[in-house]
Image (cartoon, rainbow, N blue to C red; front, top):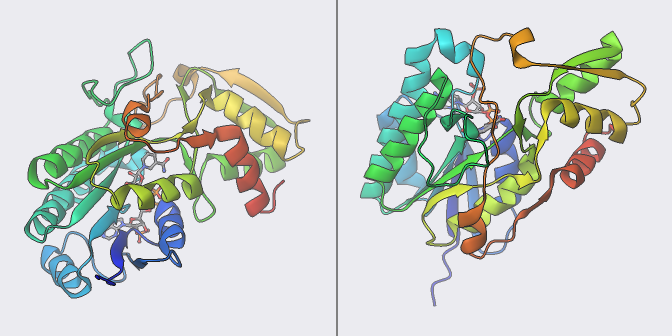
Length: 289
Ligand SMILES: NC(=O)c1ccc[n+]([C@@H]2O[C@H](COP(=O)([O-])OP(=O)(O)OC[C@H]3O[C@@H](n4cnc5c(N)ncnc54)[C@H](OP(=O)(O)O)[C@@H]3O)[C@@H](O)[C@H]2O)c1
């Protein structure tokens, strides 16, 4: 009998999602997990990445590391493309040669948001910002190069180890007392703790392909802000609705970020719970509920 544990390498392990993926994998029976981040090697150093991977010999890599500053990517296009796309190409080659599974984290931002209904896994991506384009190329490299690849598109992440919308809303409410939040972008808030559990389950299967994985339910950023404040007993704070035009940022955002989770359910996975339930747990986790 083979008693060897299933070995998972988590990149971006000090980031918001990576922290929770490592946590979800650690202590699981039959699983051995290791996390890496910038301090271990820069993903742009392919030789260092290959050497590390050859030493650890993972069965699967959950690739959370990325250039994630969506607005900064507009001015730093080449850097974003190298980290998000070229480094994934090289990682995919390493995985293909070593028969390693590769789970690539991707994003709702591969879509332009113009569709009038939620996006299916097979809808054609058409990114409207540099970050989205770099992630779309990453998806293509992973699928074309590594036969054992999972593409996991997610959206609007919040987790304990990162700056995110929930924290920003709580902070702003305390300093300003009145908020202006866009109500013409719709998507699914997603708790990194819930997504992490799905990722660990997914990579232990051979159900390769493209997945959409978010908490259940859709809302606008404005509705999201209202629920955050309600659950943290700060609903006295006024939340005004504004549209994206009034809130210009360097990178354009898709208005419709709703993702259908057909592949996830078809493949027999349990969906992620409704975002409101996940948010309540998250607020308790960070001492805000
Ligand atoms: N956040 C969201 O709402 C969201 C939505 C959809 C999809 N995603 C995707 O989900 C994944 C996780 O997102 P996140 O928000 O958890 O990211 P995050 O907190 O920004 O973490 C990213 C990690 O990657 C590391 N990293 C960046 N460049 C690197 C390099 N060249 N070599 C090695 N490590 C490097 C970062 O290290 P340093 O901090 O030292 O740079 C950081 O620890 C990403 O692939 C992202 O594109 C995120």
